Every structure is written in structure tokens, then in C-alpha cells.
Amino acid sequence: MMATPETGLIGVVILLVLLMTGMPIGAALGLVGIGGLVLCLGLEPAVIKSGVVLLETLIRYELGTIPMFLLVAHLCFSANASRDMFDAAAKFLGHKRGGLAFASIAGCAGFGSINGSSLATAATIGLVALPEMRKRGYDDGLATGAVAAGGTLGQMIPPSGALIVFGIIAEQSIGKMFTAALVPGITQALFYLLVVWLVVRWKPELAPASERAPWSERWKALLRIADIALLVIVMIGGIALGVFTPTEAASIGGIGALIIAAVRKRLTFGTLYNALFETLKTSGMIVTIVIGALLFSVFVSVTGLTDAIGGFITGLGAGPLVTVLVMAVLLLLLGSVLDGLALMLLTTPILLPIIDQMGLSPIWFGIFLVRAMEIGFVHPPIGMNLYVIQGIAKDVPLGRIFVGVLPFLASDLVHLLLLILFPVIALGLPELLGQ
Image 1 (cartoon, rainbow, N blue to C red):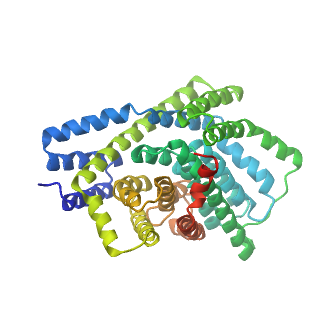
Image 2 (image 1 turned 90 degrees about the vertical axis):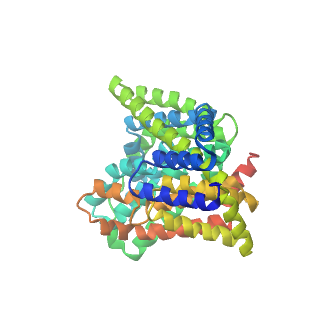
Image 3 (image 1 turned 135 degrees about the vertical axis):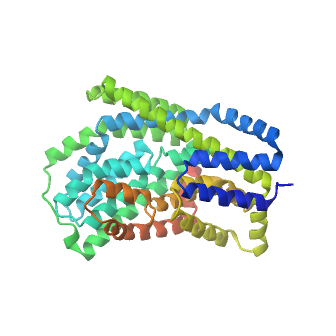
């Protein structure tokens, strides 16, 4: 009798309240999911169903990609990958007006390709790039905005933890998700570079030009990242071309990262222990979140909330374009008060069935959702990247960081609109490669 859309809606409201009180995402999702199933099905069926979801999740082959890609990121971080990538970009671009801001975004894109985390990308590149830009007289708003926005590339450029989690929850091919994310990730980075170019053209004093590095230093800097760049190309290229699965790519990446750290003489017992410890800790957190999200998804499905919402939208007579635009507005509003991952896990069980009913691609929806989630990372007042940057540059007022990120936020909204109007941006490459 309790399995009604109203019960599902109450569950969503309770979840929102728990998330805003600071409860961990996985615990909040699991608590609402199990509690809702008890109300809808009874105690014994709810316990049995929860146990089935737990076991089926833990034995999923795709989950193996998470710890391996995390290990790649931690090992590359110990090998100074973030500093080397920023340094290489700075040697080639630093002499131009706004060049270090260009280099920060390029460094975020490069490090994001091995890290897969928005917060970690913003933090690691920020530690390297912000002191350099501020020392060269860059405006604090431009410097902090470039790194905060560039950090979001870690969620879109494969391998991305958010794409892996979405692929598992939505039962979509992670390899296809990675391939679909390549063009949106590259165009997103290009949009950020365009923003910097326009800003420094408008106000040249915000980013003074600096000295040009000789070609000898440029080639040395490029050689320092050649091994990591090759590793990334092998992993992502192999997945896109169908040479190996994401799990196999992650395993190859783990071995490659170990070799790189050893060759660079950065592989000590301490660094290996720390990399393994951080990998296991983060993997445990992500698996807990996935299990909680799946339990919540089962609860929402049992209540019939998604069918009710789908029927309501169908009754309005709105076409797919209008429906998706409404979804985008909803996601952006929720993104201003919710953490990005919480936003994705809350809305996927509700919105994905509607996308299926409209005949739209779930792969495209995953890219669209992650893109909207990324905007939440730099969307005042709760954008987590903004607070990460403020923690690095403690003397820069938070309001200044908010203002500095606004041009990049505007480019994000334009990019999201283009992704909605032209789904081929995400779906073109997988179709071209026959995936």
C-alpha cells in the first residue's frame, strides 16, 4: 500500500535533507533506499532485495576499473605528473599574454586524463599553477577561475570516476562512455582557452606577458611528460579502438604507472604504501556510494515515481528538446545546493527512465549529466572546486574567486546547450568507431 509515487517523492525529499545536513552520500542513499523498501515491501523482502543488490554489485566485473585507475592516478602523482604537465604547457605557452592561464587549463586536461577527479585535479594543478601566476602579476580572479574551471576536466576526460559510476548504475558500456566523452572533453577545454583569450584581449593588464623559454627547455619539458602521455594514449586509445576493455586498460595503466614511478626513481615503500592506501580508501567509498545508489534506484522504481513523472511530462505534450532543457534547468538549480556526485546519483534513477521513454541515447544522457554535474563544481555558492582553490590561495577572498569563475561558467552553459542541441558531439565518435 505504501508503494506509491507520493512515497517515492517523500523519499527524494528526505534524501535531499540528509545530503544538505552533511551525511555521507553513500550512507544517505542506502538509508533512504532500504528504509523505503521496508515501507513498500515489508522487512523480510526488503532485506532479501538489499542483499541481492549488494552481492550483484560486489561481483560486477566493471568495478575492477575503479581501484586500478585510482592506482594509476596516485602513482603518477607521486612521479610529479601534475608539475611536469603544467611545466611543459608553461614552457610552450607561458610567454604569451595569458599563457600561464592557458598552461593551467592544459595541465588540468593532461592530469585529468590520468586522475579522473575534479577536486583532485583542481587541487594538484592549483598548488603548482597559482603561485606561478600570482608571482608573474596575474589577476587573482583570472588565475583562480582558470584553475577552478580547468579542474572540472578531470570528470569528463577519460578515465573518469563519474563516468564509471554512471555506467555501472545505468548498465551502460564504460568503454563507450569513455569514447563518447572524448570530444566533449576536448571542446570543453577549448572553450576555456577561448575564455582566457577573450578576457586578456579585453583587459590585457589581467595577465602580463612573460619571458619566452628557449627551445632547449621546451623539448626537455616535453620529454619529461612523454612517458605519461604515451601511457594515457595507450589506455584511452586502446579502449576507443576496441583493443581491450576498460578493466584491461586500467590493469595495463597500473603496470605502466609502476614502471614510470620506478624509472623516475620515485617508487619507494612509502610512496607505494600511500598509493595503495589512498586507492583502497577511495575505492571503498565509491563502492559504498554505488551500492547506496542502486538501493535508492530500486526503491524509486518500486514506488512508480519515474513512471508518474514520465506520464506527467508526456501529458504536457512537450517534445524531447523542451523536456531535456527543463531537465538541464533542474540539474543546474540542484547543482547550486548539492555536491556534483550527489546530484548525479539522486537524479539518475528518476531521469534515466524518462530519457529511455523518449527514445534518447542513455550514453548521451550520461555525458549530459556529467557535464551538468561539472558545472555544479564551479557554481556558486556551493561549487566545491571554488573552496578547494580558496584553501590553496587563502588570502584571496571567496567573492573574488566567484567573480573570476563567472566567464568560465558562462562558457559551460553555452557548451551544455550545444551538447543538447547537437548530440553528435557525444555520439559521433562512438558511431564512427563502430561501438
